[in-house]
Amino acid sequence: MSAQRAILARRVPPSDSPESAAQDLSGVLCGLLTSGGDDRLAAEPQSGANGYGCVPYPADDRYAFSSSTASSISAEAYAHVSHLLAETLAEGGKSMDAVLRGRVERLRAELTGILGLAGTGVGIVFSPSGTDAQLHALFLAGRRLGKPLTTITVGADQTGSGTAFTGKGQHFSARTARNRSVAKGAPIAGLSEGVAALALPLIDASGRARSESEIDAEVFEAVEGDVRRGRKVLLQAMNASKFGWRAPSDRCLDAIRERWPEAVQIVIDACQMRLGRQRIKAYLARGFIVLLTGSKFFTGPAFSGALLLPARWCDGTGPAATDGFGLEDYARQSDYPPCFAALRARLDAAPNPGQWLRWEAALQEMRRYYALPLVYRQGVLARLAEEIPALLRGSGRFEVLTAPPIASPPAFDDEEMSSPTIFPFLIKSGGGYLVDDAARVYRALRGKLPAGFPDDAAREGLRLADTVCHIGQPVKIPAPGGAPAAALRICIGARTLSQAWSEGHRSAGDCAGTILERIRTVVRKADLIAGHLDQSAASGAPRSITTGRTA
Image (tube, rainbow, N blue to C red; front, top):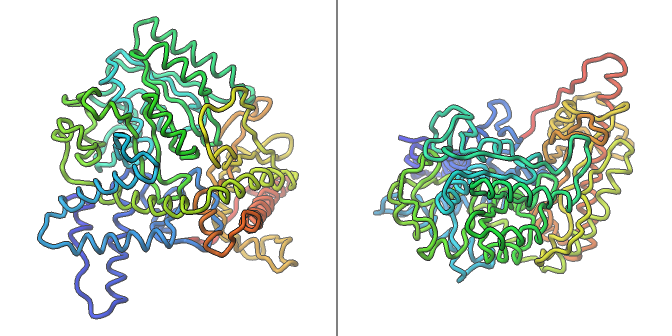
């Protein structure tokens, strides 16, 4: 019996007390929310959190600006999926697998509707994570185009570490979402044969952010070279990266699509989900595959991935995909839409309840976010984009990284997402920047600092040391001049805006002001921790911080 089946088999026994029944259901729910994925979902025994510092229950006592990485589930989403789980477990006389398959199909329809794609014929493939989704994209592109095939990844320095493996059809972890042990980096049978990979960074070795025209030229040249050599190309474009950057330009993608329609499949890495719904629709209309997640901007619990497939892939003209393909360790029958009947017949019929619940939680966050007036969302994000960099620069210790200017105007409407929502920064130290110590700052922000830790905010009645702050984990990059560095990230997610609205901040100005006060606290605590590390280094003391346990 699989781990998920064992959890579901527990059901929720009758109880004399509503409190006991709620506790039983909570145990089942937390178990499922951390199941059906790879090792990244595993909880650390001491803290109960996964490697990203997130827990499978509400943790609303923290200042959470970590949506580029991962978020703990919100109280509203937790209540929603708890109700769904109780409803599902209570359904009698039916196979639990059949009930869950029906729930997944309903989820597929609801996600299509929320994204404004109802009636377009778009197909949805679910996956445990954005990294898993890349494997599905490679499989589908290979079946449509044929091989040999080259995966060209734009922004490879600002995407997940697993992309170095998925682009070549290799296992990216030692354990798959089907809970099967594999050798990380080993080829996936039926997927890796005839596949090569090329990584194109957004920042060069000297730490310079490459211009749009430079990236466009390199992408076009790389695609042209592979096609000339008789290879097919899966071009993975970035929208948006870990820093919120986009490349190549819309103009470049359209030129490639028009020139090599039978040799190139364009895949948009939109796993951060920091793009407008009209842009998503336009990408699909052009025949692009779109990768997305519900666990980044929309702050659903990690991990929940999906691929949006152009309508023609589901009308009988897409790849039949009836042969074995080596992804049995990564896919279940209900992950693929009904139009892939032959493929679904080859896959395990048991659904993934953990994946379903994580997506249901993400959909609840999407509903809350899109219920906010567009003018409100635009106003809040525009003001935050203006003032967050100023807050960071005001410390004198942080160097803000900005995206290279975009020369060509966007071809599609990005709505409020025309404003940046990820704010990466380096921490200056001596004559350089923090690298490994940036991870210490990141972890110390998530905990309560030890008693006696210098706290220059105490005079204002604010205990920075006790404020739990969760931001985006460090990304190692070359700093300006080529020195090694690691960038931390303050991120605005959907929940940031919907929570402020629920607190009664119905004007963009009031909402932004409340959010900025919280970010000011995060910046001051980060500055405090980084200063302590600098002082420790100057005195020769060990550069470490012991923090209290956090939820």
